[in-house]
Amino acid sequence: MMLRIGMLTSGGDCQALNATMRGVVKGLSNSVDELEVYGFDDGYKGLIYGKYRMLTSRDFSGILTQGGTILGTSRQPFKLMREPDAKGLDKVAAMKQTYYKLCLDCLVILGGNGTQKTANLLREEGLNVIHLPKTIDNDIFGTDMTFGFQSAVNIATDAIDCIHTTASSHGRVFIVEIMGHKVGSLTLHAGVAGGADIILIPEIPYDIKKVVSAINRRSKAGKRFTILAVAEGAISKEDAQLSKKEYKAKLAARAKKYPSVSYEIAAQITEMSGMEVRVTVPGHTQRGGSPCAYDRVLSTRIGAGAAESILDQEYGVMIGIVDGKIKRIPLEECAGKLKMVSPKDQTVKAAKQIGISFGD
Ligand code: F6P
Image: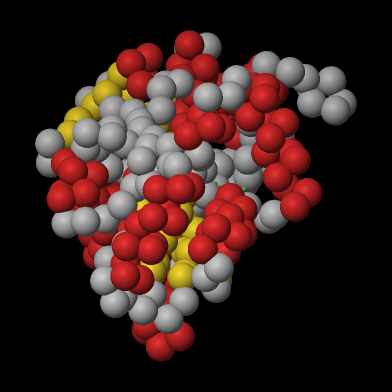
């Protein structure tokens, strides 16, 4: 049997992209007589502009532990996919042309929510696609876990751990701002793992007065410091009442004064309590370095699951993990949906039980 697949990584990178591609290619090359793999440069850009290279199984050796992506990536917003590029090129037609020119049996697409929406668009256009869920945000609907998430949790947890020692020496309030875009999964998990005292996530809007009360309660109990794990998308109760347009305007106004939500919260805490506050933003370090052991295993399973789906000629699916088992989830069921943290989540409940404040 001969098989010709295309592969691309799109959107923000994360750990374990290479590990996942390795799983796909090794899984296939052990099952078919001949395998041709075309790797597209920088995500959908490579597919649109016909920028690709043929890869051999050797390219996928020794990359299990390598962070980043050997293919490169770029952000190509889904909402612009149907719009022609600066030179008037029809991007969707161009992607289809590249696919048919190379006579691909299937396109394996690694990426997050936006990437998944474009994968679904290509499915609707008649291409054989398989989506593999990557993101440190763990916000992809239909899978319990995305690869990259656990590695980022480890890094964000390390950041909080390091802050703990300096916070206790100085007796200060510290905020560690954690990525996750509009979702609080990464902050919740790193916050709990790092022993944060206050966790603020977008799904549970905060009341700054409650946040300050929680800090004061700790001070009164003789604790010398307080650590807040704040999601980059954290939102106050008042702001949560605003319309989308009003909130956008609020964010634009805030950006003139503060680099991010944490700095605004820090200023409010200082104003209301007189306490000294420091902000730490680990930023893109959370997407860097080697995948952790958990992600290496997950990626290998997802990659092998993708290989199996290709061999079964079942396309138009995301390879996810549900209740510990690899599952093929139809793209039409998950594309365009965001997986958020439920305020009733068991981890939220446990955190509250042990006294962590969510400022609500
Ligand atoms: O989706 C992954 C992510 O790291 C988010 O957590 C973050 O909001 C965003 O990407 C940052 O994007 P960029 O790398 O384009 O600055």
